Amino acid sequence: MTNHDAVPNTAADILAAAKALAPRLRERAAEIEQNRRLPSDVVELIRATGAFRMGFSRAWGGPELTSVEQTEVVEALAYGDASAGWAAMIGMDSGLYASFLDETVAKEMFPRLDMTTAGLLFPTGRAEKVEGGYRLTGRWQFGSGITHADWVISGAFIYEDGEPYLVDGSHDSILLMVPRADVEIIDTWNTTGLSGSGSCDYAIHEVFVPEGRTLTFGEVRNGEGPLAQPEVHMRNMPGVPLGVARAALDWVREQVLAKSKPGGGGWNDNWRVQVTLAECEADFNATRSAVYGAMRRQWEVLEDGGTLDDLTADERAALSLSRLHAFRTARSIVMKLYDLMQTAAIYKPSPLDRWLRDSMTMCQHVVAQDKILQSAGAYLLDSRPSFPLSLGITG
Image (cartoon, rainbow, N blue to C red; front, side, top):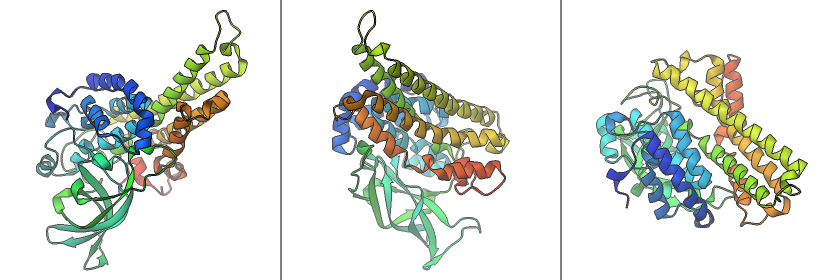
């Protein structure tokens, strides 16, 4: 098990540890995929980098990484293996969710900084109001990292005496956190890609959830600043596609150079190879710069005491749009490289095969869907976004 006192606790040290782990994750990638979840020792290797503690505040003794720093760490881990990067990105949300819980409750739930949380936020369950809390029942999909999680967070519609219930006239659903031991894992995760993320379905049967273990992103109860914001859990997601795209680019370049001859005449002199690699590098550099540029501007405004409303409409829309673009551009880059390598790419020992499937699968997440485009477009046109939380809007 991880010695928690020895875990890195600064941005520089956590990033260095993640980069150092990446080659080992690459070596284990086929095993991780075949296992359909992260092996327990791989979970501990990630935990030992400090990745799971990134969102905990300095007031708690945590490293309180900026959104940019968190994304860089996720990117470094995904460079080694996409599923490992995805599980780290999901698991580290514990520290971010803590801002939306009462401090006393949160500290009881998270006595250690390296505990992980999994679950689906969309309200597909049923939370019946009872004395002191809720009785939660339901089945959810996409519990990424749930096989090694400490806590499971789930969205549910609220009922009282069997009838739909509206809290304070404002919302009809809530997020509830239960211990992993109270959750039934349903092994459904047989997928095209991201196979090692263990994103199984799960069910919860009539579990009592105290009021204190519930939250909404519209109410910050503990902490303040740039990380105590409603869309904070979405910010570091582009690290996964960016890490995969960078890994694919570097690997293909290595293959080309290995097939090149001193003095010319090899693959490196092939016009198509040169143009394709350059085009992919241009796409990568542009989308990566957009992601980090939008996040840096957001952080600048929030750190100065502002709110998301203090961003210009273009700046606010750029956050969700650059995130979507990173997912779709990574998929496009991997597909171009796959075509470039032709038959050499189709055999499963080739990591390009896995990166193609991983990038295809991750693009099915809601953050890479047209709902994000509609929401940003509607916001820019002073209309109604279909997914306002992607813009940090909770009202």
